[in-house]
Length: 523
Image (cartoon, rainbow, N blue to C red; front, side, top):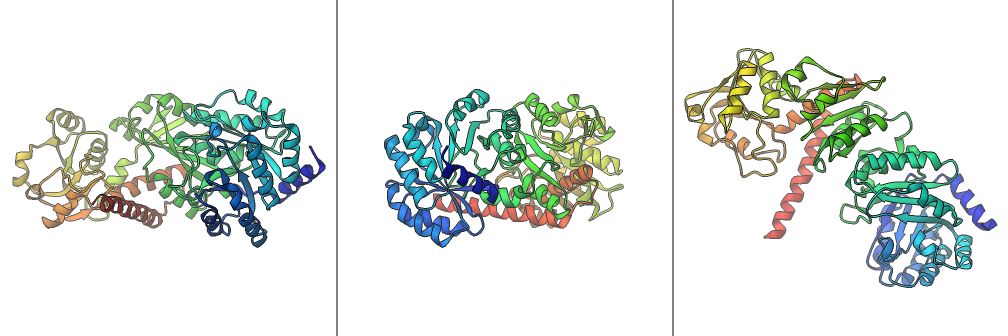
């Protein structure tokens, strides 16, 4: 390695590279640098994807102007070829020449994939390393495997940083990646992460395992790799600058979980109460995979969603009597000794909003449904001495639940003869749309109607309830109150309810706006 390259790498290490490198793409040079201009003040570490340009050479004078105007910026020049997921179709010699010219224009780092490096002349690599710090990169778009063998091949070629990017097919692939980084980061400057939806763990936690930095996208529509997270999410939601060795890990696990509101709400609560923790999405395709991650990462607290609420109970060391009675667990705590304890906070999500409005003792409550959510609602209400009736599409499950909870069942034909203090919808009818409702307007005879569905905020049921003269309780209150109880169990601190409600309201409003925009495009 040349003295110039050694000095440059040492200078970059001394500067302590920012934790997040934002990948910037565009179809032409002007647009590329305009995007860089818009981002650089908030995130001065940028990767310029020159391979997205039809004529990358035209961007080089503009890059030189940009670096002169933004001396604080740290730029990575990348001109990746198709075998490694890039778009540059020129020769390897042309690729190296563009990277060298980008370095001459002011890019402090260049990224060259292993496949190109092994086919390059040593003199060409020496020339590139003399101009900028070299990131030698490897991408596996199919799996996470043979990490040590891959690194052995890579370190045969002198470079300043070695980047190993694989694909996570399981949550545990992230653990394998992070253990790999931990074993080797003392000897080499490594950048390591997993792609894919299941790779989020490594994108956030890889830094504390020893990865020099991680990558982010400008926006949801401009991802340069599967599963890439936006810079806004990494900074605002996951607070990546504060993730360190003592950071406690929490998450929501299920299949699927991509659209869960929990990360936005829980990370806001952790930030507000100054808890050193981060809350992640954990797309667990099997319970075995999830349990391995809980123990090996280790995960301190877990929100459990479908399809694992019932299945996870047999794998826990203990549960409270309430969870055992319901037969479903939505909250797990990992104690210091590694034991797993289960709780169910869905009942708090139903009971707390109602207690703010009326006395539950002797209140006449109708619960729609007989599944897991309905069980939590029925048992929680019965524990507070409410008079609970159950209505379900099929009578068998309703009768079974009624017997175990000492409640009663009713028939739909009886609805117009009865009046309730509260009707609780514990079915998924109306989820994701405002067209369906489990009841008709003339069947809604109640003081309050509480819909456990929270997306959309105003469901068809709630609209009909208003028209029928009832007061309504949106499902987001249920979501926030059950999440607040989880937060209290995990941290021992009171949950910032107002902050959590504000965040979930904002996120749902943004989703609704996107949904409306998509609908408008169709028409």
